[in-house]
Amino acid sequence: MTPLPPIIQADPTLEAADRELEARSRREPCRNYLGISAIGHACSRKLWYDVHQPITEQFSAATLKRFEDGHKSEDLMAIRLRMAPGIQLWTVDPDTGQQFECSDFGGRFKGHMDGVILGLHQSPRTPHVWEGKAVNEKKFANFKKAKAQYGEKGALEQWDYVYWCQAQAYMGYFDLTRHYITVCTPGVRDWDSTRTEFDADAFMKIKDKAERILNSAVPLAKLSSNSSWFECKYCVYHERCHGESAS
Image (cartoon, rainbow, N blue to C red; front, top):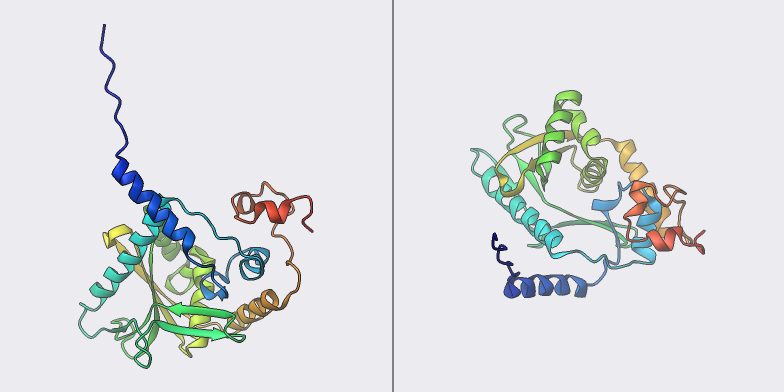
């Protein structure tokens, strides 16, 4: 009789570390403002809940590790960008020593920009908002396809509308006319970039959207009345939004 393979037990030390990672994340306070990084989300009702009736989303250890990988990859992109001759990249505000911050509506609409870059070889005299994004291989491939299909200036909006709105808001609030995003796979094993121009009309619409969300006394309209709609199905507010008592 062929012997059964041995049962491989999970490592209790690593499991304990993962549990502590999750616990620390749960102890972090909810954000008390509407984030510029989220304003482009398709569902204004979700953003309303985020501000007025927030629920702390419970992330798994695997997801939290991906977040951390992303932050470290963004730091590495900044280091490598500075290696290019002529590049000046500021990732903290010289006046405060902290990350660049902008806010509106009494601080209830707020964002933190990755940096400002000057000396790009394709536009050496124009300062750009700089944002670094680490994504998985599939999304990175879609980014390259968007550049090929829509051109450099149109790629960001078509590839990720949330990032595009973030770009427009930062350009508007920091009075800059160009945005430069570098996109990489985890560990910055591969990277690419695109530049985006400021759209004043889009910036005003973003501000109007933020004002509606912040000033509404009741939840805004649902993205879909179908509770199984893919953007609703996995939303942290699914039960509250689509429950029997939800309007």
